Image (cartoon, rainbow, N blue to C red):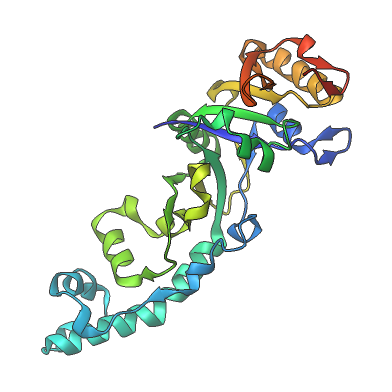
Length: 278
């Protein structure tokens, strides 16, 4: 599995410490409902399932699913069998899927693409609070194994499919679930409009699990933005010192020659009070 990066804004206070820095200290990630995401179109396709007509269904597709339909063997006509299968799917599918979505909690990560995630200006702008936040780097496989072990739950995961249409064929989805459990209902939670392609996103999906523990051993690097305030920097340094992770700390800086983001080893001289050095 790939290296993944989780951006944090570090701007929401909980008593005297930001929520994101508290989560780093305590070793947990927050999994959210899909309806709470920033993309206004997230999940809209859930109401756009296509239910085919019997004449559009292949015999192989129908045979895979009709075993779950009561009294199907009593019907001899192939067209009528397909009609009964589709009626059964349509009557139960939306309820089942709606319940699945309501129970699902998601944590979003980014991967390297055309631009390395940690050097991505848009990611720092949209999710890293304009270089005032931080990024945690994980190896996805180690992280998933750690979460599974500490939370007594098998986490599903997958890369986002960026697409231009919001149509989802219900029969194809169910057939895929039957053929390969890994290609299950959760795959519909892995679809976003193509405009979000720059994020190169990977998602972890849990069932009703929001505050999700992980081992600090999974952290490969911690990158803080050059504009992060002094209080937050000092809090993070203290946490990493206690966890013996200080050597993994680095800084995302603005390179004035190229106007790109450059990653440097941590050095207090990169910061001046709460202003960045240009």
